Image 1: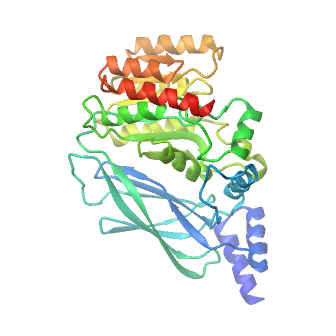
Image 2 (image 1 turned 180 degrees about the horizontal axis):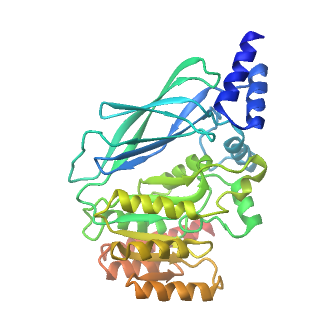
Image 3 (image 1 turned 90 degrees about the vertical axis):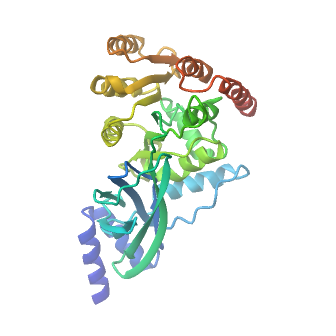
Amino acid sequence: MVKATKTFRYFKKITQSVYKRIKLFVKYRLGWLGVPIIIPYHGYGNGKQLLVSGYVTEDKGMAKPDEKHTRWENLLAMIKRYSSDEIPGANVEVQVNGERQEAITGETGLFKVRFDSVSPVTNPNSVWLPYVATLHSDITGEERKVSTRGEILIPGTDAEFGVVSDVDDTILVSHATQALRKLWLMLWRNSRTRKPFPGVAAFYRALHVGQDGKQSNPFFYVSSSEWNLYDLLEDFCIHHGFPKGVFLLRELKVNILKFWKSGGGDHQHKYRKIKTLFETYPAMSFILIGDNGQHDPEIYSQIAAEYPNRIRAVYIRVVRKKAREQRLSKILFQMEQLNVPMILAYDTIEAARHAIENNFIAPDSATEIARDAQGDLEEGS
């Protein structure tokens, strides 16, 4: 009884949510608490400043995605993503380049660490710097050591520009503005059976290596999807051959019964994350890529108004042909006044054509992009 009281007091200390406090205590008493694990996210930095984040949660016991998985197996995986308990109040130590910092996970299980005094990393080529994250206690506060490895992207001087890309309905077919179709994809498909837009992976690979094929232009995938979908999005990009990059997602603010709202709501967090990128890399210019299904044009125009001389181009995929035409016309006019090209593209080939004309990608990459687009169309048919 004394131990139970102590444990409840610990849960009371680490979370302000009465519901979560009681839920954790009940699971503890019934022996249902899962083994804690750390999910390390790709960090990023400029050599002098490094930003690292990750997620501490119960082990969800999720099987690796497979194209042969049934709809029910995919449904179970999605339920696990949103039902496993994140662990607030956990002490995590992050070590990089021989330096250490500690962080406490927040209400949603996320931890964030910023290194300002780390030994500078200077390299003409972009590098992925390894880091180690260690959990020193389990969900009950008892001593337990769990470690995992992550990576931090540090662009080199070989980077000509950075690429900021939305995810839903920009690279990943999501039907974000059509609730039923979106729900169907989330429940019945996995990262191996979800479809990319035709040719977009080849286009991104071309942007990654640049006009002469020798660059290592960094990619940042900024989305309104929650961190719970990180494993799905990362595996989707790996499986379809997208450039390795940093994901910047949103903290979970919906419960299991409202997971279908993922990617919706306030999108201003995307503006804040993109602004942080511009401040982290003050000498870097960017290409911004999104779609007109939700609020990408507004967010990108807001960024352009603040940093007009640092945006090479804005590509907006047209997924809703009649979506607020008056609104888009106004934004296009504003971008023209700022001398920032915004291209409304109905397919990847249109965006690639502009990129070739402006020396963002090599002319001979058009062949691979067209071939990739045709292959994606045939696979999706």
